[in-house]
Length: 238
Ligand SMILES: N[C@@H](CCC(=O)N[C@@H](CS)C(=O)NCC(=O)O)C(=O)O
Image (cartoon, rainbow, N blue to C red; front, side):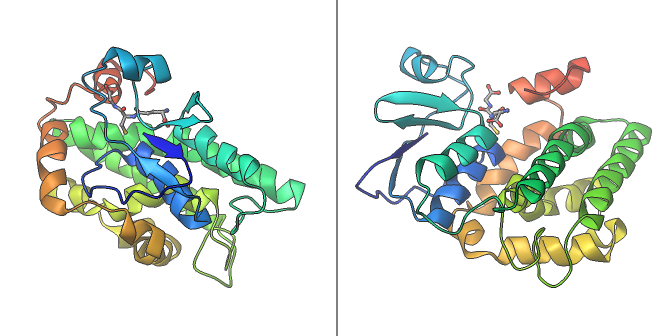
């Protein structure tokens, strides 16, 4: 959970949540002072449910008011701190709309097969999900502007933030599910390489041993997160 505040308390390096990580990268990029508070979203304690009734991270408390949903939080930070740079969305309305179209693509076409790829125990279903992951990423990467490492070329944006956690953690599906960045295509390989080298991403990453336990549960299809349960039941992920 994040509270934009005047004091900056360094965060412990233990956050595994990809969605929380998006908001964290946005705070670091824009250098908004914040306080990081660790909560266990699986416990869904009353004080946390009062902040996010869905009981999911990330959530922020801003001037005593609560907000949740990773991408909404990132856009909120952009709106609430207009003088803080870099801006995470382009100034041109058409390009802003394009950013939102491709962020929506990540939500709808990348995340569901990513979770299916992790959780499927059946080889054929894994192959199918891996192909869907490749397709979603190559379609996205083909929209990337030339002349710089990020979606909008030289300008790092919310599209980069929306996908960065899965670029940094794709070694898990490489080690366990036969995924290769190169198979997606050159555009994605170069983009993903740049994302994992970005300071705000490196600074907020956690150590690998911590992830092994968390992702192990997904790889054995034992995870009990809302996303894992939805994937198992064939429902849309939250
Ligand atoms: N759409 C939400 C999803 C948030 C979400 O599912 N967060 C996960 C961590 S990545 C969580 O809190 N899981 C706890 C649970 O499922 O009980 C967002 O983008 O913020």
